[in-house]
Image (tube, rainbow, N blue to C red):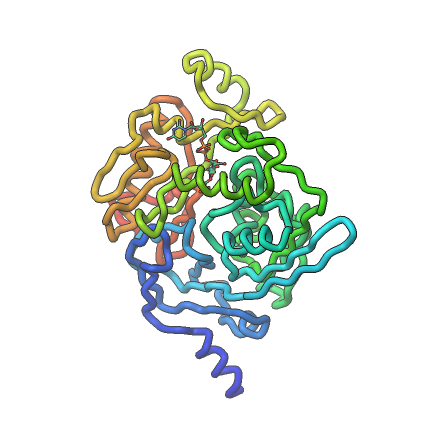
Length: 357
Ligand code: EPU
């Protein structure tokens, strides 16, 4: 029993824990308790949180604390990377607490290719499956064979196959049926040894067809650095909104009045539009209010120039959403997760005037 109590104390780093440096928007928020589980025993020793608001935080690069009080936080700290191979593939198992970009660099350094288009995406490995991170024509789901996940109900770790994860654009089972039902501890990625550069996305198409994986990665890094603000200099969470998906009828009418509209056919009569382009059209690129703003080089990114309040970013996001809706009759939805002391919220349920207490 004493051992168990000590483990609990070890996991519970401090009470009234400041999260300002643990969210890439750098807004003020305080949590009553933060747990850092790194073993199965740590997970089994977590208190029963079924009746208490809590939030699972990775590196905090896709989370907005909407008021200054946060709920109980669980920050998975599962570390370690192991690599095996078959004749055809490399298999890489990675702890959820590892950093995503470090993993990309490690793989490329060991001649395991495939993740080069996903370089420089901020965040932890455990967060990657949740929103199925993607960039420059590649998604996490392209390589994910298994996600290991601690199930609160059975108190065991289950293996969920890539197919069972129901990956879609910025979505997965972890945001839907398994939301708040457990914790990702590890991901298993499979990389075919036969590699082919994926360089069709705008910007990468200027690379030579025989470019090496390192050259592709360097190009992705330079494209991202040119457009996306570095969160350590200008706090932000990357794309704030998801790119909206519309049907053909809607797309055809938009294309008639906006012949230059960027679009990405999705199959099944669906077309993905560029939210950054829509925001730019309503004239909000570079717009600022109350210390927060729409980034001047990439309108999909909201930036914090000096506000301590997540609510300022919510207010700006609501304004941007309204303006886009007024002009295009399209609702753009945040991909950033909204968290108050009551736990996670949908963007719709947040109201500005009443605060979020
Ligand atoms: N565009 C504008 N104005 C802007 C921004 C974009 O007109 O201010 C236009 C661009 O000219 C281009 C189109 O919109 O024609 C798409 O822009 P871009 O290639 O920069 O990509 P995105 O759709 O804005 C998505 C991802 C990014 C990812 C890039 C590259 C989402 C929500 N975002 O952005 O992911 O890096 O593609 O693949 O899908 C992130 O999730 O944090 C992120 C940065």
